[in-house]
Image 1 (cartoon, helix red, strand yellow):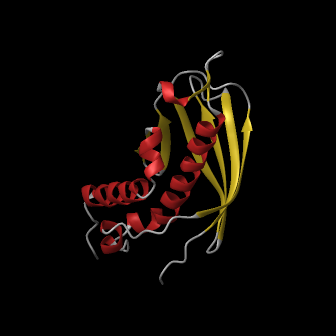
Image 2 (cartoon, helix red, strand yellow; image 1 turned 90 degrees about the horizontal axis):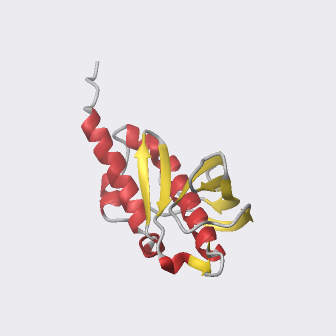
Image 3 (cartoon, one colour; image 1 turned 120 degrees about the horizontal axis):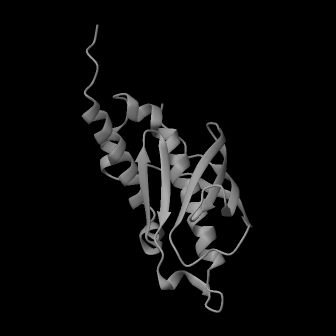
Length: 166
């Protein structure tokens, strides 16, 4: 019987895969979005800064920044979910991960529901993959600020999945 792999190696593969996914989207850094990983769950955080204000009279977050934040969360969450099984085993192609050659899902359509004004503070989001096949995926994203039960925006999107070897 094969001895189980040390958890530190599995965590290292997970961190590497997430880092490569995030680094492939320069807009993530531009918006100041970070991802916290707890097991298979990712939480995106968009730290508040003045450049995100769309209406200074309220003040409220710009709708485009909100939509981009939710779409980024959907793409990273979907890419992460599609690699989860491979990061759990030694089947992850470490060479393609290390060279940044992981193909990301492509947006087919993305619909945002603005439920209330985004306040001038940090925002959080989580994606839930509703369906993911070899060619197509459907994702729902929820965005909140102070209270997870009080969403300020939500979105649904459909994505073309990258072709995978094997």
